[in-house]
Amino acid sequence: MNSLLQSLDPADLQLVLECGELAAARGFRAFLVGGAVRDLVLGLESPDIDVLVVGDAIAVAQDLARQHDGEVLRHHAFQTATVTLRDGRRIDFATARSETYSKPGILPEVTPGTLEQDLERRDFTINTMALALHPDGPGELFDPCEGQEDVRGAQVRFLHEQSFSDDPTRLLRALRFALRLGYRIESRTATGIRAAAQGEFLGDISGARLGREFGKLLSEQPVAGAAALQEWGLLEGVFPGLDVDSGRLTRLAELVESEAPDELRPWMTLALLAVHLAPQERWDLVRRLNLPREAQRIVVDSGEPWRLALEALNQLSVDAPPSAVADVLDVLSAEVLAVGVSGVKESSQRDAALRYLHEHRQLVPDLDGAAILELGCADGPAVGDVLRALRRARIDGDVTDPASERTLAERLVREAN
Image 1 (tube, rainbow, N blue to C red):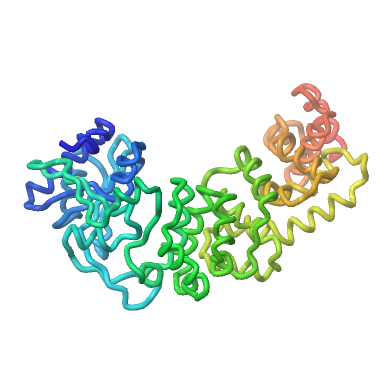
Image 2: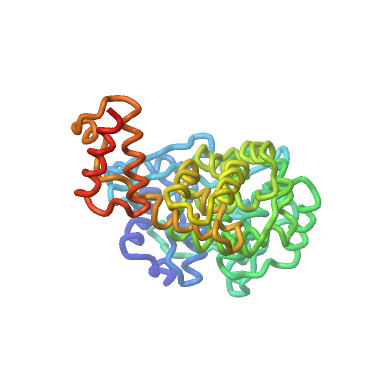
């Protein structure tokens, strides 16, 4: 068995060899392919298990799911499937195929193919290696496009001159792989990227595909990825008017570490790239990239809503209590605040917003609405008024423990009644 295959985690090795056996039982051949093989060549752990079947991948996926009581998600149009095991591991299966592109940027027409045809349809040579999984020769390396040589040479190289016109999302993937691995972009591939940047290749891609690839790049490389897009002339192709300010992006990246879930971070970066866009242009941007609702809110609210909030902060007196800052900023999400603060130079307003974000945003009264009603408050808007007053008192430090909060709540209820 090839030492590369033996470098897999033992549990993953057992699993992929089982895939090979299941494929062989049906008269098919199976291979470990793509990023998993690339990472093995690099001596890295890979989170991906991608199995290519020369035959019927969906059938093999169903066999594996049946043996492990797992779940299988089928995609018949592309003859692919994903199996999720009970321990959470995922295995992606694909039927070996060849592809033809009737028009740039659209999804290809797919027909069954050989191992060589499947490897040669891929994006970059470093992703075209395969390790055999069939029982009579597990671990045999297939490398028809000299991917190992490019791994050793630390370069990203496309497979043919039409690569970017066939699938313009490869423009973004080229930058992502180069930045992730610390590779240079091979000279002909670099020429192809710059030529594509002069055209409208990215405009041919559907919003969903462009948004997905753009989000992956910014998720992995929020600062360097944005800078690379601008350096290679691709940012304008994503959407006109986007602009990179490395200082702001760096400040945002520092805030993002503590202020946002992973899935929202790329859209916070996008919101900062859109700093000069007008409100309507922001709406056009989120529609172009087909962003999910939460991402739309971040991009849109980081524009005019944040500007209005900043104006309101500027109008507060220097001795305004922290609760006054909270009254202004409570309407915005933590993600929007992080984006907005990243664009503000050192000032008392920036300090106030950061203090609210880190210290005051999550403060809430110990008492809830039911407790306020038990104190004799009339049901209705008065309950909310009391709760808001209690929160302000906690933010300002006028209430520091449950006893003092209850005392204040009793007084507020008497006054409300």
